[in-house]
Image (cartoon, rainbow over all chains, first blue to last red; front, side, top):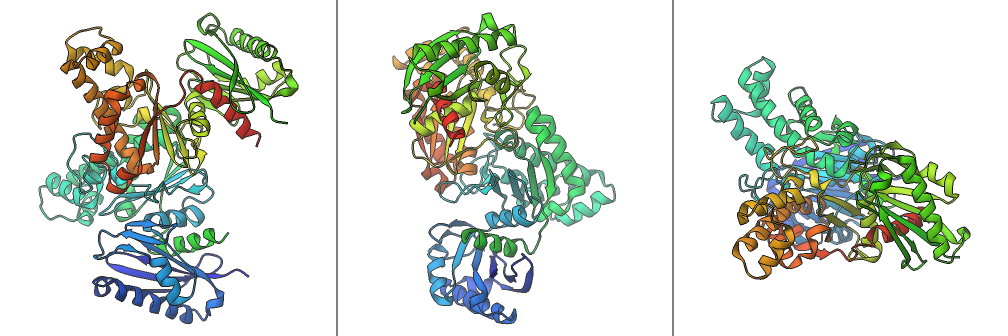
Length: 308
Length: 308
């Protein structure tokens, strides 16, 4: 009997839950703010247990019909040990054996993983990367990360910490990054850097990325230059990946990725002009297929892959 | 019955052949200069056939005892199609179905692959990477390349062109590279770049890397500065790889890698100081275990993997 999965997407702002049916569709959704629970690990775990159980009831199901619960978290997670190592944006989450704690509470198999890896599983199985053997799933936002599907499998790295594309240096002597490195990709294309670049190029402190997008659509030259500069950096950051990993597809999601119009062409052109000829001819750029549901659908893939 | 393999390592200068016994030891070796045969593909293929057959006889074997022939070539090779796409240093090798041509001539299974990938197989199976699930095998020389073992498998990429670590940019606006890119790793740490750096720092045009090594051993400050600068660039180029791929081992081989003393400590320190903390704590640097035999032993692994 094919079973259902409860997917949980823990973010710094909101926690989203969903029940996914055996064909990968979300049949029940629920979300709540992270903040009231973020102060205490136990409060958050209690809220998660309650909401997971409630969502199963709302879906008209019983626990026997649930294959498991998949949870994506924004930070360093040890998938194999079911261990949350560190979540930079949720205080107090350092060294939590979330898998075993939650399993005891709800009496269902639980799997935990890094959120970007889970989004990558969603895109790979049901989204823009369906059927693709080698792909990079780039997520743009305050943080910049990536999931890697290589030889048809999610590549986790030695400590489940692979994919930190945001912390590949773009310049040896570039600006210092929060991570301790210099010139990291994120210091050029993370939201904070983009906002700083926008206010500088536009001469308007405090301008939002949405505003630059609206202005670019109206043909504002400074706004167009801003997006071109941003896309150039994104492209430059991907050149090395294309040469190193020779991927078939690069999926771009998160924050500014809806702004395909002013980004993808320049990203593509930059990569093609700088990458090696074979690798530069091999790749396609695609926009992520999922937005809000990515974490929940990915959690479904995480659980079903684990139980294959 | 366990069988023998003939391994062939085609280089721009020499072609090395060896017969490898079922336990991975080279029992017969042979080599000849590439140049006399490089002018004509057919001449080279004829020489290969003759030498392969001769080496089997020299080893006291017959063809029934040979599992196959593995051939490593310095350039773009399509392993699956058995197709040599392009060899930058051996004229005329563009678009050669070497596998099928040679199979017909010698009546043995033939497998062809890129030489760095084959060296990586050797290190992974019998060398510095034995038992390691995730590793990078960096080869330093005129060209700079890498082989990747990820999730315990050789990662080839979409067109068997993965591993071009030498063409990951170290700086967005760095020097133009032969490959068409800018600021590639190879433009800083390839032999040509190192020689230029050495003559500049030492104030001695035409100085060799061996000389700088000897001088460094005697405590010459300029020579020590040269090696430190070189190692710093190598380290900087590996920071991104460590963050992206979270490898367990980085194997360094080729050209200057025997110069462990003045290289590995600075490489390690540079990576640790700049990489993310978990990834930066996870990796070990090891010197390649094989030198001259790497290509032949790797060819053995290539053939036996293909016939598993």
